[in-house]
Image: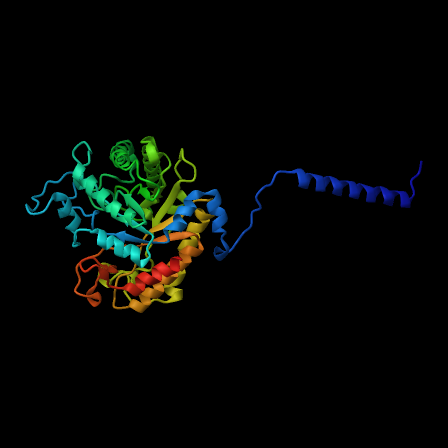
Length: 416
């Protein structure tokens, strides 16, 4: 039987209609699946992300962060154990707390940080001088750490404690990114973190643990350390996570902060070599890096001889590098469901408050667009007035008042 042109047309139309009906049926009955959409940083749906990954909720809730620097992180002889002749009129724990030029930390100081609007305090802690030969922590040191943690938590803020100058440059750190000695370091890290985690296992989610600080290789290189060093960092981060989880209690679900090599973020090799540890808890890990900005603006001239210091902040010269780093962190972590904090940033005073306000506001606003929270590094110190400050200190701990309230306000407001 021959089919005319009209018949062929009818058959084709019927086929198209049938295919359309079948496609509609499949669409209606198929399970929902996510639609991937590329968005600009300012359009990042942080609410949606946090609904899937609760660590994002914590980062967003922190708002602006502040470091209690040069306090519990001080180190004396740069070897394990207290071996120096300490003053008779002050307990060893307070000797160390004040050793780098700061007064004893008080609840009133931390209350002032909270009143300014900061939502989190990072409390760097060095354990080296408070460990015996078997890496047992002296109880009085752990108790003092707990007191300061309570100052922070009592003011409703998040608190992060870490291992600080147990890593770093020089000859003393016992914790390094060194594959040649990795088993020994994994063992010792586990011994120390087990004690810390056991001590705080009943604390709630507002207390976070950070694996370590700026960990370097055996040659104390800040960059170009190579894949072996980066792999060592990945192994030590894994040892940290596994150790904390193994102590049980609230530590089984505690939010944990893990670090890149040297806490680096300026180069692709460090960021791309980072591997997120396996975690028995779901969505409880946060990555932390440190980034200050262009050396010429944030530091003083006498620190190096390879650049010139300057007090003026400009969007192109000083703002664009910040934007590039934040984009790198977004592409490698945030966009993949891994939250990020900047554990340290800041700029030294050069009697350039207006420029530092611009720096701080731009820095924190840019980070917020990418879903990243920032912690200003405040090393404190004794200064007669704001004009005489030669560090990144914003808060006068001796007088319990702000040297630079305008900068602190800029940070807090930019994070809202």
